[in-house]
Image 1 (cartoon, rainbow, N blue to C red):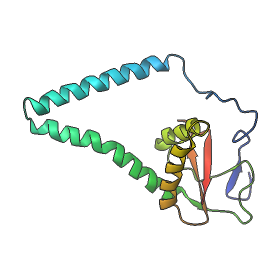
Image 2 (image 1 turned 60 degrees about the vertical axis):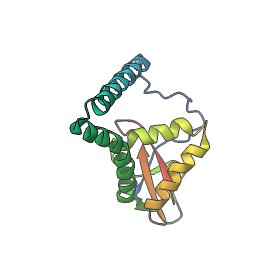
Image 3 (image 1 turned 90 degrees about the horizontal axis):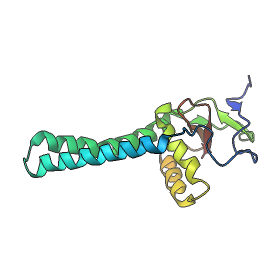
Length: 157
């Protein structure tokens, strides 16, 4: 165990790391396709309830459905603020991650940044700017990249 608030993790930014995610599950595209079809059917059903029958509960359900992603992103900002730790003197070692990691409920955001980092840098910059709004100066945060939290990436301000 290290004395600093950082823990050495050797697989981050390693040149030999494969481009594909090791935790990819076979058959997952079929599951995602089924979920997308179910969500589309739900949206059509809810739209019919709102337009044809003008039911109030359907309007509230639509409002809740559309507000959940907004609340998730807002909660990510709060989690970044809460998980940010001061940078150690001299900066972080090359392959170190702070011990304080943001909650594992936000691992899809970490996975998305890792997936987009090689292809579309402009989308990752949007997330980094959003994190800058919440992080205090001179701090660092680790964002989990998978559900069990064994992999994470760091961001320092």
